[in-house]
Length: 180
Image (cartoon, rainbow, N blue to C red; front, side, top):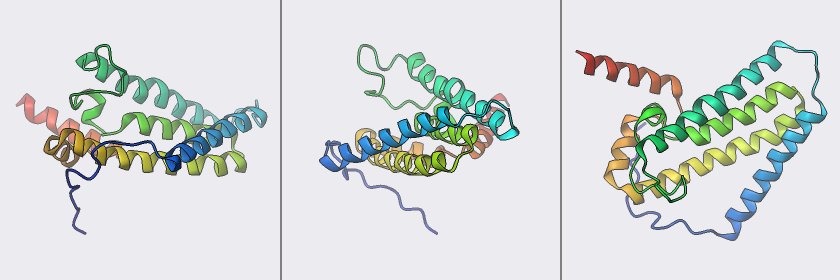
């Protein structure tokens, strides 16, 4: 299968549409419902899946989420603007491993809630949230192609969207090449 490269100029500027607002509101409500269900059905008898869920949550929040915040702050690209209003492509730190660490971190957080609660309702509430985040990730890629042009298309070729294992493999190979 040939991978089609995105065209520059597809989305000139993201505009908030009623559909986007409704979908975001639904996703937020589903996430809140998932958190509430996790609290309600929490079983204090620790199981292996529950412990795995807490580990995944820690990795999502402090590992991947924290590293993405640190990578942006380290480059001081946001200055007085909001964190997500960068004017320069961030491609260092965790962004050398995966393109969307913030979305990926939030997806892991939703998965961790499923593992912690182990209840079918949290799974039903969490799956649409993950699908919505993936959809947002794709939209952001199109917007970034328009914002950064060919630089972002090259970045898309170098760094996987959210395959952290492939990204780590490429990152380690790149570091080995630069050492010799």
